[in-house]
Length: 536
Image 1: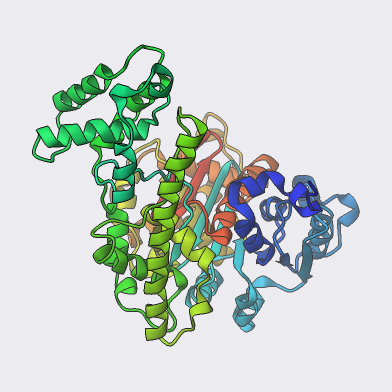
Image 2: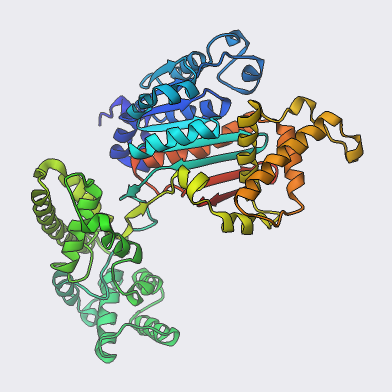
């Protein structure tokens, strides 16, 4: 069998996100603002799996500090443009990826040529002050382009995802089995009735699929209990005893599988709550020519559920491995697949009807996309992020931050300090000076310069807390202010590498539209080795 070079090269990741995910990666254009050590680590972890292209925007010249903390810079690059230097070295990692650079000041570019960033699939911003960041965020928000805001200072890492809406079909749950044991469809019922348990010899009896075993005994149970499923603990235990009574010997693995999966017979098949919320969403209710394929398909599935599906989602059509002979297993598998295929065809008709009503052609949504949506319909997700303007200006999470801040172990304190050093930078055009900051165990030994830096940063912390109307300032806050001053806005190679892995993973989720990305902020404390996520 001939395997093309690309499949060989990306074999492991293709197992994670399949060809569709890889194609999305290869068509993506990623922009990195500032070629910091953290930014380079993020790009490294995106270049290796094969994004289409990347562009680094950075006017800064490489200095000794850059060469000391970034694995993609060395002393020979000192004095050269940082964007060019990191681009050339990152390109060496994967010949399939195109790399570009723009040796311009990102802040000036945001102020004067904001539309430059609208060409990208995703923008990653590192070390951008608050004011230009808000302007960039609003432009990308209106263009529906995801923005990642990334910061590392000392042993603290932070990143935030800003995006109006992210929809996911292939969320990759542990299992997508939908056996319909409580509401078997006619073909499945007829198949189960072909098994005469009592007349079978021991060999055949030991190869009855556990699905058939559960169907037989659940049908018997419902006849004796007015069509109801086992509900209480006692009833569930009794149902398992009925299954056990049909077991001829302890070596029958199929009956052991039936007992292990008996919970599936107790579980009523219905539309999951999060899917019902999607069906009730205004975006699903009111479709236009600008509606995405996700919402068109969600509406088609909703129409199917309300009509042909009789309250149920399309059948996924997947059958798990189980103890059975080959012909029996293939027959059972075929029954599920044929039912799923028939329901996909019905959904396709609903899709075509919807597309026609909004003035779209039928080829707007391909059959593969419909197949995938039907298969994963029970697990689809919609994430709506808060904008940066909401977080910073119009609707900050004041009460939540106040509550979290009272816990000495909560990482929200680092968020407060990151916001405070942004205010410090905006006012002083620098971060707290680590070179002059030193505090002994005895505070009296601290230099006047270090005390001044501490008090100045504390002023901005208090301003921020005052804006949030937080009056109960915890005692432990001073310790963290000391630490953030000591870090001085510096990056550490190990923290850059860690954040590179965390952020690139979330970037890949958004690009491939597979797996569920976090919502919306992540903070990592390298001193405690503790991470937290927040909706801010």
